[in-house]
Image 1: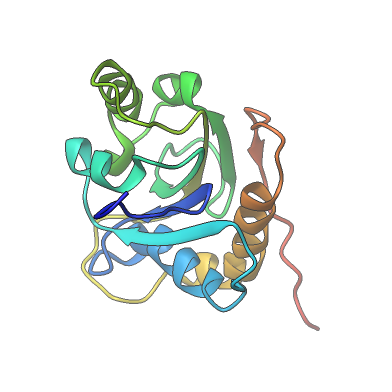
Image 2 (image 1 turned 45 degrees about the vertical axis):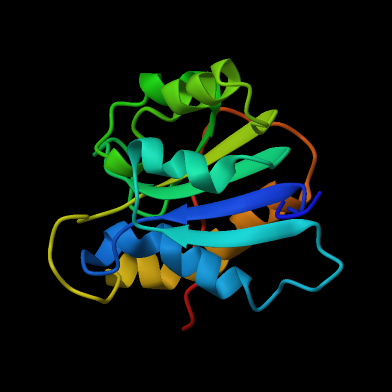
Length: 175
């Protein structure tokens, strides 16, 4: 149809704020994944500082959504990846405003008859400090970045659902 945008089947949506250091981890991961993307990959990559209803514009038209954002629970070390299915997002004690209400947004989109993703995978990255104004990631997240990128890429590339677990990263250190 004329005027319609054609989407790939999967959207990797990185959320965050670049000016708040670790809060920008979702944005950084998506930027780095752009280097891996080929024209044959059936996915789009989007970075957004938005939250709430504004996310609806990004996710309509995709079959799968992989949402990547910072979270601070204080229960696990920074760099841990919380793998959440959509229905469990409200059970994580967190401070992550970007994907707050994503369940309601998905429900609203369906109620409005919009083409919403059938599979939603959330990768919430535990961070040290999502509130300090600075452009750089903390040293812990900077060291974890290659592994975080790989975990998100694997989630987006696979067709299996989320495990609903927190996955600690094993960081390699050079001697």
